[in-house]
Image 1 (cartoon, one colour):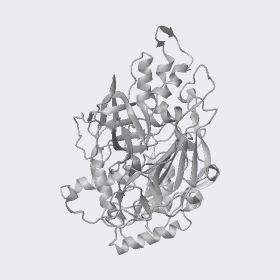
Image 2 (image 1 turned 120 degrees about the vertical axis):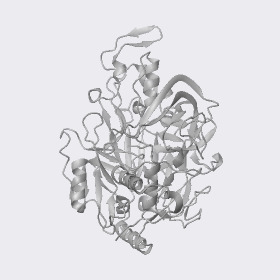
Image 3 (image 1 turned 30 degrees about the horizontal axis):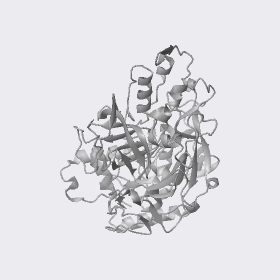
Image 4 (image 1 turned 90 degrees about the horizontal axis):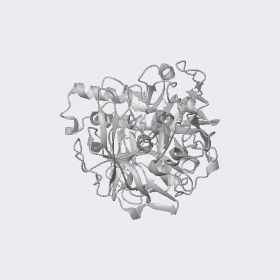
Length: 561
């Protein structure tokens, strides 16, 4: 069938045809990663299951990226949920750049500056996107779980379009070692020059990867008050590892302070395009969602990076510890339409196959030659939307298919028929991170994913790991075909919706595969359905998905891996 864009009134009226075409091509090839919108937040609406766990609903804008409400210094504002980074930053009321906003900005009234500044660089050489401001500390929390003296960046100068898309910053859920703020703060404590700082820098539109951290400063002369010593053994001081408790990211500080029943969080992401519904969007903190048992998940340890691989040097009092850097797990094999895909020839065969699990990535990204093999099987870049395809990752000996409804995206041009894949190439591993795949939201909509930090300072005592539970129904292919048929009846256009990040959790009346709570499609201009939030969700408004993706591309100024 032909998926054709419809007119979206005055929204795109001022855009030239070449600009629209360029934006569309950017989305199709590189993906976009935009934040969502918000609801009015009321603390009492957050559902706490016990004193050490909580849950909060996740907002969704066109299945592009997801956000949650975060409390920072007395305000509550939506921040992008990002397992691929580890820093907390929020745009300040003192911002002098592109800072017009309909969401709450950080007032800085209780901000305690360290006297240091940070500049976070995003995008590629053509966009020159940046976010800069002072580093300081303030209270911060999510779903009613808060810590005092949380270090964050208060952004006062930016040319990103983050605010235009409804979020005020980034909520990084990664490990301390990849935190830009942690490295700068601990290096200042060690009386060294501040490190070269960058955010999720993107050297090229087709090769997007979190910058690999450098720990070179730990091999130089370090000073603690009046005591100096030369460290030449690639070994951290105990103070460096202990600084996780003070300078670390918000979520890892909740873990370090023993504030959670378990040192973990779990995500389920809803589907707001192609076939609206799927899993209920929710961030579960300190435990799995209600009714889900740990032994129903497939648990896989994270890759740890030795100092020889560029990883964090261990403390001198625990010299045999090896630390994770990102949420990266081993992949046994990859299958497409039932055939096992050959391993990439672009990286060393000595590097074991692995994947980053990343909520901040709107696509699935893999080795260039493997992705090319998939497109060869598809018969080209565009294909029949109604023909279900099966991309499956074997992880921990179990099959984890991507729902066919999440594998596809309508072709974003009047000159093309059918669909394209939610798939792009990334650079091969070897220099820096060792993962070959980055599995973003299309994969994460097909699973319940649990992220277990374990013991942050002594990972051998409680190893970090990820647990996965497939939520793809057996009839997912038939459901895709039904959605395509409905789009044909709708003039050839799929519809998509967006909804706001709620201040409470969703109460689902149905469960799907594995007992995971399910969302339900909501009619236009309504706020309740079988899966309804404790407080009002956003109004869902069906819009032709092709135009919404085009609009996203046009306002895009900040991209994520």
